[in-house]
Image (tube, rainbow, N blue to C red):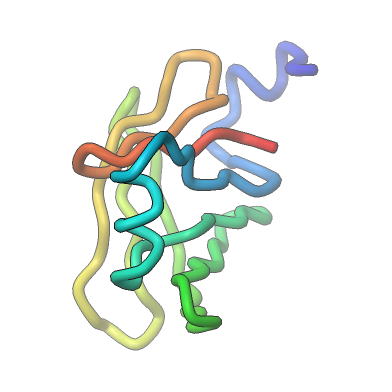
Length: 97
């Protein structure tokens, strides 16, 4: 359950998991898609299918979220829902557990 502080803060917490639906969800998992995003403070751990993980930081500006890898690699950007329960990156939706 969200409280007023969660809605005001730009920090996210918890795990957002890839929403799978039908054949497309199974194909996406098979080709190394991001499986989940786990947030704690200003840090994020990205879990990719096949057991690969990487860590980084993130920023939230309104509904925009930007994830920057610690190793300086290519980052991710997406949209955060107003209630902070869903993150959409490209056409993939991640839902808070």
